[in-house]
Length: 335
Image (cartoon, rainbow, N blue to C red; front, side, top):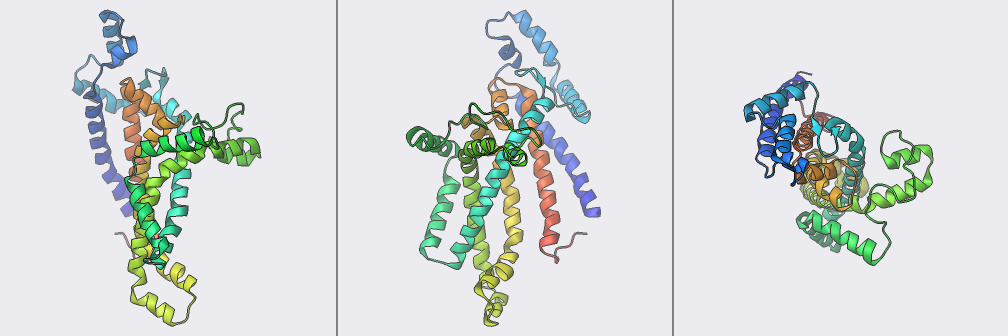
């Protein structure tokens, strides 16, 4: 409990510093938000009035104090391009981003971990060569290029994928809202048409978003397994006549979970960054595409809120992973 409280207290100065950096970076962005909102043909008097309403006529220290005081009250600001509070826009769009992130991470783990194990247990085989080639290609392939190529091949050329236009196909109503996750809501309500459409719509975005993480997870699993398989206790387990499946999964793989959990935590940050690109390519109505629109018109509040939310989630994920270490390995103790 002391460790948990200490980590939470350490997070406070980190978030303050992150907030300061976010504020500075948004203010040095090119473009005038007031002019963008008013339009290029608007008179200067109108622009000045909008600038005053946005609070941009104040000095930077004054703007930062206002920004921090608003954050302490739970006010993330007003999105001028949607004319809604940022917190309301985030609440409406977060389920779409969460669903895409969950599917991508599950895909990365379900494929990456078994492939890494097979690669390690069949060293220098065709499977191992394929695994290493896949890891190299997946980690170095630009996400925006991969997304465009998947759309070109599977939608434009082959016609087996639906148009990259959102979470559900045209002509279908959204499933009854329970969690906001279309796949889960479709399953809970028994809406098979919405379920099939949601799965087909999310397939290409999830593959695009997961490939880099999948490659890194595969490589980490392989290297960790190779290290563990050469240790004495694994050879002892084999000498006792235990089945190879038991040796690999109960004795070897269980001891690779800590480095694997560490990689999963780092991949969360990677997914957050790539979400902005992937959602834009596939017209996915999540937070990523919302922030992209905000960047294009220099709308500060959504950009600041997204960066701060990313920092908070990253801190929370790493704290959860640290606590999970004690579950995976009882030898890990925190003072």
